[in-house]
Length: 246
Image (tube, rainbow, N blue to C red; front, side, top):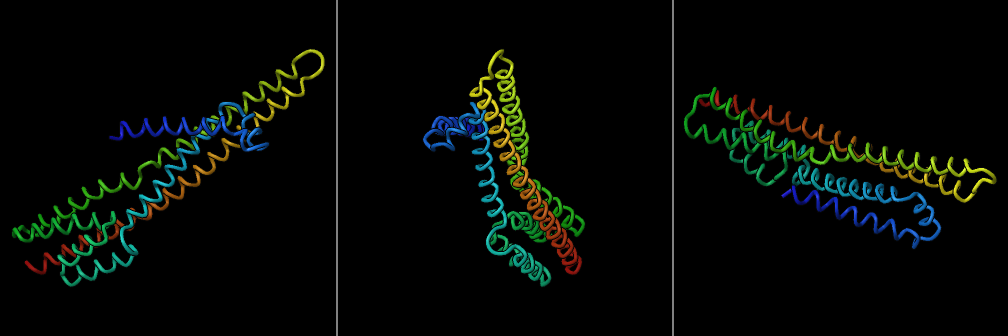
């Protein structure tokens, strides 16, 4: 499915961005000045549209990954249930919370409950519970980190496109200066405007992309740390519970 969504998304972003580019004169003097940046302004607009889409998607996905209610409160309640040996109650809490951490912990608890009902030895219970948690964590982490590389790539590409526009604008400026006789002030101004507009657009896209990338990486790292800590504590409590009931 993603094989079709990604090309369609890029195509749609390109169409919208160049539609905006050719409509810039409708904004008045500001639009006319932006249009003087040349066709590369359309490419920068496309990158900003894609970047904004990825930022919105990351905000929505990370909010969904936190699940229902405050995550620290959920983890505290799960610990309380496991301390009392109420594995079924902890699974019920995970099913209600429905976040990434809840999915990971629930996978381990359900595997533990299944092995306990089969009368498996403690070593097998602990090992397979850890395996179930690791497998579930391996499925959740890529969802948390999705599109982060795209944000970083867009920031890098925006810088290069802005620099390319700057170089093209300066080439035009020096070409205007290189003519014999009077300097063509109009061509000189257009070249300088193209250089500065592309520089500004590239820096804007790059700065916003880098800031967004770092913010989301920090959030994902903190979230992964909380999941790992909660999973480790759950395994330890389950191992202790298995030992007590042997």
